[in-house]
Amino acid sequence: MEDFREEEEIEKVYDARLMARLLRYARPYWASLLLCILLLAVSAGSELVGPYLTKLALDRYLTQGVNSPEAQQGLVRLAGLLAAALVAGFAAGYAQVLILQRTGQRIIYRIRQDVFGHLQRLHLQFFDTTPTGRLVTRVTNDTEALNELYTSVLVNLFRDFFMLVGIAFVMFRTNVKLALVSLATVPLLAWCCFYFMQKARQAWRQVRTRLARINAFLAEQINGMKVVQLFAREAQTFQEFKKENDAYFEASWAQMMVWAVFRPVLSVLAMLGMALLLWYGGGRALEGVISIGDFYLFTTLTRQFFDPLMSIAEKFNIMQSAMASAERLFRLLDTPPAVVDPPAPKPLGRVRGEVEFRHVWFAYQGEDWVLKDVSFTAKPGQTIAFVGHTGAGKSSIINLLARFYDVQKGEVLIDGINVKEVAQADLRRNIGLVAQDVFLFTGDIKTNIRLGNTEISDEKVREAAIAAEADPFIRALPGGYHEPVVERGATLSAGQRQLISFARALAFDPAILVLDEATASIDSETEAIIQRALKRLSQGRTTFIVAHRLSTIQHADQILVLHKGRIRERGTHAELLAQQGLYYKLWRLQFAEQQEAALGETLPQPAGGTAAAQ
Image (tube, rainbow, N blue to C red; front, side, top):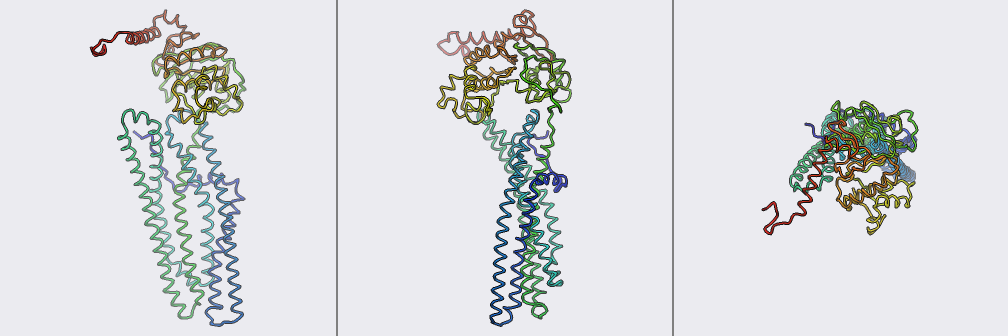
């Protein structure tokens, strides 16, 4: 079975279509990038001016043995030109770095915005099947790798090109034979570059794969740390992490070894070129065929010629990372949302709350139907409850109502309008959901109730909390409504988080209120508080309740009993008990459990131990 943490492998080291998409992000900043290229040309030219001016000083003045005012003035003039070139090169380089880094950050800002915005539009099934750590890798590591591509490769590659062309031009213009000798090792160096690039591609692919696996593993284990500690799985989990960490270490080590061998090989070839130049050029200089200035110029330019080649090879390493990251980012951006708004959505204001499921068939995968020909109608202001065994399809109905998923067959209608024909934002603006697993964000109590909606005033936040009976415990906190909330609300009890979730739903004043196992994880006292609040909150709202505790839904206008994806029974609490069907069996089962629990609490315990022990 494929490991869900396994990262996709990227086969292409360079993909023209990917590069075209990357360049589209840079297109709005073409003027800044063009300016950077011009500044790089100035910077590269200033580096070539130094050796040439030194050659002139050697040939015209220093090797003539003549100390004259003209020679001294010539040296001063050349020194001034060299100083001016250095200042110009420094200014151009400084400006280029500032402009390029600022432009690169703007490009990455746009990419990061696009990726996160696209993530928010994806359907819930995508997040159910994709590890969180992998998505975090996309938004952080992969976008940062693209930053290196824009700032270190695309533009700075021009500098290396300018240097290579400029050096070759000066060499061949000065002495063709000497230039050919100086560059004799370039073909061999090019072959080595191609060979090591292939090795680097394989090594870098493994590094990216292992890094994504570590991120996915960490996200999973940190989220499940309570379970790990509860079942004393620390040692086993540590060994699993060690296995992932070792694999990442080995991949990183292999990648570094490629470059640990590559750089010395380049240096050896560069020194070999210098040795050929010393042998041939030195002999010609002794014979007087070339000047000392020419010999110095070639030795300097030969060293400078190999630097851009090494730089290009290193940029290839960056491109390995960037292209792999671009492939994965664009694969994410190309993932189509399964639930999309229609081209011309129908306007949907404040709904009355009439909900109809009309012959709905739904499956999460293929034709493994979770709901089969489900039909029911909820009139405005009614309370509809769903009961049934785990997997019967209760929560799926809620997912379809909020259009987290789309039905394969049938229709879901609100006020007579198919939910597929309206904008998702308009639909969900009318629905307030309180789930069993409450998610609270880092911030404070007030922020978690209004969720950043500035239209919800502090007074409305307090009113919602009072209506949900959350106000007493909130005011008892040291910070009150400004009490800090850590990630997922870990410092609050399950009941407190649930009450905040109720207040959150009410603050948005939905026409439809949905409670998905909202009282399953709380104590009896908090449940009683919620039940009292619910009687007030459901007035004037269509309310849907998914519950295992049948005692919490006796007041419902209609109870739908689901079994294996179908509605088997429907009616009020009294009507369903009278039928003595599935609901009656569920009720008797829960009633018996409650009676046994109550009886166990009231029975006197023998002196020698518990009743069970006796």
